[in-house]
Length: 146
Image (cartoon, rainbow, N blue to C red):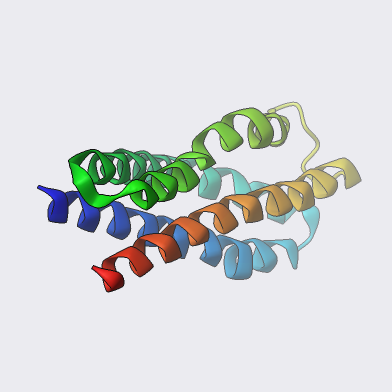
């Protein structure tokens, strides 16, 4: 059971990290190279589709990492679980207000304020990328040392 939970924790964290870093290094900069109206228009469906996938991966990785600790994998599995798990409250508390403003149907998608919010969202998303990368690297180090 320990090996299975370690595998699931690491796989889900790595998938989350890959997607998050792709968003920060490729997808979001590409859309931001367009005019603000296009960037905002493309951001909304991309966000909505990605949110479901990333939330699921973060929660699964957190649960599996905590289970790996519970099954005797060591305290550092819990640390990894907390790192990846932190993306969920960070998203709900810190990122959500910006997201909510961007998704407001009354928002002018071409406004300078919309552009500022999109830029802010990208910076906030980078925190999620960093937390997930730290968790993934820790999980992988633990697997290699085992």
